[in-house]
Every structure is written in C-alpha cells, then in structure tokens.
Length: 110
Image 1 (spheres, rainbow, N blue to C red):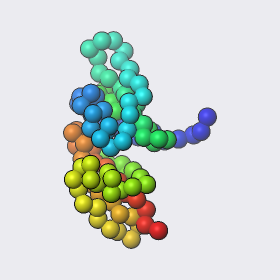
Image 2: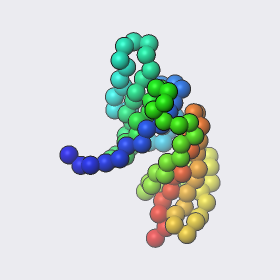
Image 3: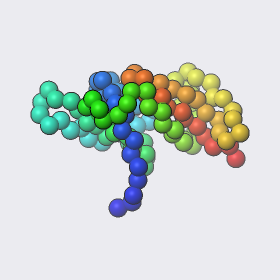
Image 4: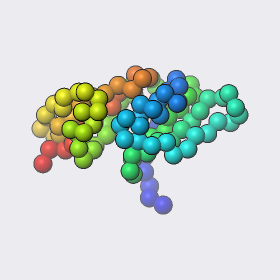
C-alpha cells in the first residue's frame, strides 16, 4: 500500500458534488451511508488523486482550499470557461465547487 493524504471536503449534496467533480475529471469510487437517509461519505478519484466528499457536518470546514496539479490546465480551463493565469510556478485557474470549496488547479511551469 502506498501512503497518501486524502483531503476531506464538506458538501451539502454529495450527488451534486460528484457531478461537479466529474467535470474536473474525477470519477466516483464508492459511497457510504450508515443507514438510508443519513449523510453520505463519498470517494472520488482522478488517476491517483483522491478526495473524500462528506455530508457530515464537522468533518471539514466550508470554504477549504486545495491545490490540484494537472498535466493539461488548458483542458480544465476550457471545461469551466476560465482563462489560465501565468505565475512563476505554474499556469493555473481557481474554481469554486457548489459548496464554496476552492480549488486552485495548475500545470507547473517548466
């Protein structure tokens, strides 16, 4: 097993969040609920990158910021209609998911 860090993001509606993250290239891996009608806890993945999306209040703070490095920022930027900005370290965009979590997405400068 490889060791890894998996950010947990708070979401109000896991299904809506999964749909949004699908646009970013993630796919749903699994969903867990302790019982029907209780909050969902979902894993999404984009290659080796994983995120947990949790409807459980207290699991994460709203408005969390994460940074995602991708190979092709232009494809992601086109999907969301946001022009990339060049910085000394990367070309990047900033997105906000439906729950106010912020994602900086960038391709490192060479």
